[in-house]
Image (cartoon, rainbow, N blue to C red; front, side, top):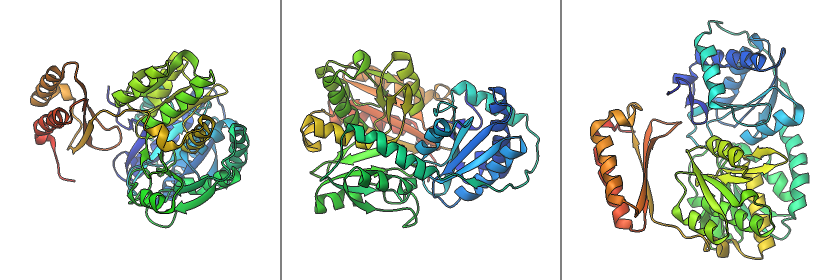
Length: 446
């Protein structure tokens, strides 16, 4: 059943509008506090971090005031990556953590991402309960409360640098880092330099609007610098839970390559439990083929790093991720979806394997894959759309065993995503074109 407020990754919308209208933000804050009480805390403690988009400070203040109105005490992590909010919950024993961020979305979006006491994203059942509390809420306008800062970035940098050092330093590595004008600015440069890398920074927070023509969503400028200056690169999204790498040739390594490199390293050291890696229905068949050569298998699940984490728990896997650059790693029983941690672990793995990133990238084949987004008026169930549903079935029948088709709505934007994959580029393009034409009545101009 579709929820009214929560999507694939928390509550997200244009800042101040729709799901993030002021009254809904207040309801969300009170509901989150009441949820924390229901799940075992008489006086919940909550931490909030945010990315540097313009609406973040106001949204954080309103959310914190509503949390306080419902009996929670709130501490401010400041501008930090979303994974730092998740880490801080466990580090300081909060009952709930919240990242105010719209991740890779454009600057005019924002969002509310809650994290459990384990530092993990809430379950769908948890979100349904919070929605029920929101819909029953009539608490009115909250009184503004002052926020106490707790230095979230500095604590994270010290702790994370310490345990990452155990995997080896990055001395002598020239590293071009695109911060996406985002939250990684407060943590990534310090950690990478402490590990010995020679770091050249692009697009720090405040240099432009978050995610605007930069970062993992728009990598052209970053890749050009890597090619011109040499070395390798890391590129984050706005809240630093997605990572891309650039190899010595200035070519991109995405989530497929990240999982393949880590699987190769871990499998060789006997550190890949169950010989399994988890990814989503969007993962390329080439990753499945590469894992097979390593004696491992790919377990697929629904789109979203939360779904990946759930399947990792079910299978006992220690490694999972998405093609977009989400990488989830198990450490000491916790599942860490931290782009900086993933990037460092990949660079360390390459050093242990004695290979360049370019050499490792070429080890993983890539089948032709095409993804097209159609902006829609509303996300009506596909099975209710006769012509579109029929065309999807016809394309799947025509593909047979030669390819794969995934048609779904985005969980964060009003988009219908059409993905086809197969061994023949022309057949893939034709499949997408047929479905895109059938979806034309739903389209609105962006």
